[in-house]
Length: 330
Ligand code: BYC
Image 1 (spheres, rainbow, N blue to C red):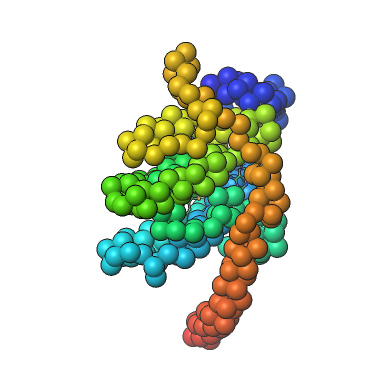
Image 2: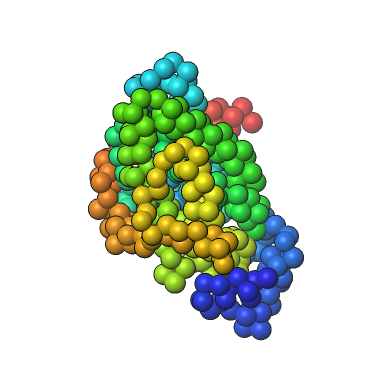
């Protein structure tokens, strides 16, 4: 299985013969679908790759609260407000499960946060776009959570136990998120012409950024081959992107909306849609910090961290006092 997957990304990884005896035992376990747990031996590269991916994933959940949080006070009805509030709280919970999973690899949550605030750790490109109208909340649920599910369902089978188990829980909640987004879109397309136009405008703006969530094309994906060989990723970026397009285009048709891609065409032979070139230049600019909202997002996270300093200090002082009291009583 792993030889074939590696071939699909065109990148070389160590063969079993080139591995040290420890690496060979490790790889054999992965190929036999046996989960790796925190106390098991693992190559340093495996640990680092997981810390990178899980922490970026956690940061994405936390930063991902910001564009949606922007609409909690402006949701059109009390029900919509309660639903959105619950969804945003879920994202905070996902971030926490993921930070905990990463902590089992020997990195603390404070260290991960410091890496984010120093610009050394990434978060998903998608959260650097603004939410201009209520329809954007529908589009995020439908497209962004839809893309997230497509990417995260295979992560439930990740070779690292704590990440895999966190993903099982997260995926259950993501399905609800996707449904609430589609429900908002349904309501808008059945509304006034202005509301339908708002839904179309949101689709126009969120379509390409959603396709970018899956990462660069396979040829430019530096980590995919090794991550797939290690059973961290099960599919390449392009495979998941294609699946997402194939699943989402009929949903857009059902809504009576037009996917903003003149090159989109059903390809009978491959049993999927052909679609136009993605603006990868825009993607890499967003990754470099030049997206529409990068600055704003980082400022919000920095402010939250600074504003919470007194509380963290209080917790530490309390923990130290308790520990000192315990020692004194012994
Ligand atoms: N944005 O070699 P590649 C959510 C980076 S949250 C930014 O293909 P890999 C939600 C990549 O990190 C959704 N950076 O990497 C929350 C690497 O740079 P570094 C988040 C990206 O790791 C709230 C470089 O590009 N989901 O669902 O094999 C509300 C080369 O890429 C992006 C996850 O994090 C991007 N889009 O594959 C609603 C899922 N794409 O690290 C929803 C877990 C690539 O060397 N993560 N880069 O500096 C993954 O599955 C993988 O990390 C990726 C990338 C598929 C994203």
